[in-house]
Structure formats: C-alpha cells, structure tokens
Image 1 (tube, rainbow, N blue to C red):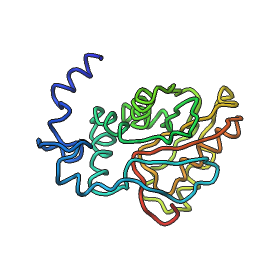
Image 2: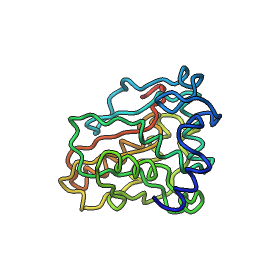
Image 3: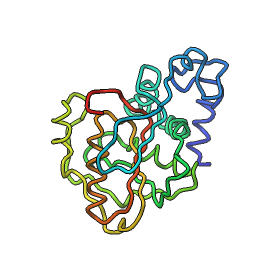
Image 4: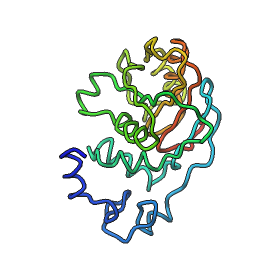
Amino acid sequence: MSLAERIVKVIYPEGLVCDSCGREAVLMENGFCPECALGAESFINAPYLEGVDGYTAAYIYNDVSSRMVKRLKYGGARYMARPLARAIVLPADWHIDAVVPVPLHYKRFRERGFNQSELISKHLAEINGLELRTDLLERIRPTQQQTALSVSARKRNVKDAFEADEACKGLEILIVDDVRTTGSTLVACAEALRKAGCGRVYAATVCFARTEGG
C-alpha cells in the first residue's frame, strides 16, 4: 500500500463513513448508511449495445449512486474509485484478457489531473485478478462533455474519436467507464477496438442511467 493510500485510509477509513453521503454511520454490508442503502438501486439489465458482447453495471444512476461518481469525477475524491470498482460484479462466463478504461484526451487529462475511468479500472482489475492495459485505446481528438448533448449529438461527438493499438488483436477486452447514458462512448470505443482486430468486447460501468436510447 502506498503512502497516499495509507493517508486516505486514515482520513476516510472504510467502514466508518457512508460511500454515498459521506456521513459517519453504522454501515450496511454495501458500504452505505441505512438511509442511502434504501435509496440505492442495483443494476439488473439494460438495452443491447451494438458491437458490445456483454454489458453490466453496479447501480442504476440516481441520487445515491450519482453522489459517489461526482465525488470522484468532480470532487477529486480518488479514494472513491475502489468502492465503486468493488461494487461491479463481472459475469463468470466472461473471458477477459485485458481491462481497458475509456481514455480521456490529453487536454482533459491535464485539466482534471486524472482519469476517473482509469482509477476504477485499476481497482477492478486488481480485485478480479485481471490485467490493466491503458496502452490499447487512445482518444485521438477532444470531444465535448456528453452530459448536455442529445442522443444524436452524443453519437456524432464521439464518432471516430478513439483509436486502438494493433496489440489488441485477438484479445477479449473489457471496457470500463463511470456512467453509461446512451452508450455512445462505449460503442465508439468498441468500434475502434474491433477495427484493430480485437476479439470479444465487453463493457462495465459503475452506473447505468435510464434514458431514451439506452
């Protein structure tokens, strides 16, 4: 364990504060206080994504789950990546050669200082005994934030925005992101990987947002 991780454990000790609201409480097994545990919605299923061989998530995106993602993504609470990754359960029949985070463009990375999807991927790979590969997929052009865009605009925004390395040829890849809304980003990543010769492509996110277009 690194020095930074030790410091985080002292400031934000597991088992003492709720993963969602951050309040001190007697926690449930899922890391939530009783109030947040009642509000959390576990993921069951989602609409099919073209070009993706399987998809899973930990939670439905709502007030409880969104607080955790936003604390990591916008609040800089990097320690949240581990409980978020721990909540994702991968299907036993998925054969995965490498875990690949959805990459940020270098300009966005420079602004934020980290890639939240990479942090989640790192812990997910460790928990499941898988290999993390950050060299297989690159965002080759900057894109707008997807949040305020329509379904069609999201697809245009990320079209041809990613490029995969030929080293992914024949590999079965798990793409990881924080939230799936329309799925446009995951599909664009899958297209780039398949173009480079990747085998099966799976996808996992912390949250699935119910919205028109899946």
